[in-house]
Length: 407
Image (tube, rainbow, N blue to C red; front, side):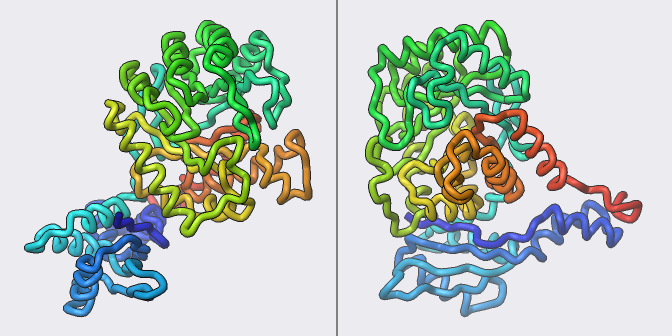
């Protein structure tokens, strides 16, 4: 499959500020944005026909972006497009108008060009999630005896409910209730046991808070009962791969879902995970997950995606994926990122245990928010994360540069 991944895109907002300082009319901004930003797109999965097309357009005229092919022997089907937005848009039109059209190439390029635009807003539990306006916070409510992060502190339903209410009062935008541990090496829990764990908590939270509720499960039987009890979103760490009935349950309930990437299972995922191209393989996995959801009737606009930090990834894989989150934007869907208290943060900070990883967690969520890589962060410490994100989002949106920047 052809994929185009944005490697560098200058910030349109920073250019708009420059246009303001120059005194240019707002009507001129969009026209200039098409001419000025320099865009680099890494292409993979190219057919020979698509590669020849890109080479011919690049050589024929400066109306199209420059094309740098990869090594045909060592890295077939790869290359880099570099140019202005208007050149790339012209290339898309040429690919579609060609006698033997190249729709896959055109679609891949279009997705890459739209990667800097926020997805459409999501209505969830009576609340509107306006993606791109700020970074939202999902609070974790573990109803398990063996969670890596809290060691079963909230296994009792009343304790879990009280914890969830406290997280909501601290500013959580969503609460994620889980009745099965997904830590490395964790063993599966039966559906009946999982329902018994999460159902009282969902019911208690629905009675005491209006915050939308997510349920972290891979099982259709659990999701069905949870959605009946008032949950709004199903968070499946396997990307709808474990239970073929789960997508249909979500669709029939009109619920939303978050689909995560994982290599292996919680029991096996950290046994020497490897990738040839980490980002490309995560993209392929998530594309397939979205296809499963849409085929079952889940509207695309009700899907979130999670790159699965710590799920079938080494220490270095996690860092690389966090650095390149922007490339996942080509999927056009909101991204949920969970780094809270995870082992790679402990390793970075000298072996600190989960309970001592707050500062490292805040550093990670602030970074992914500042890079524009996350729409939602899943955390255990909501109040602290909310404060950090408030600062980051405010800095990203700072537009007051003095009188000469206003019109």
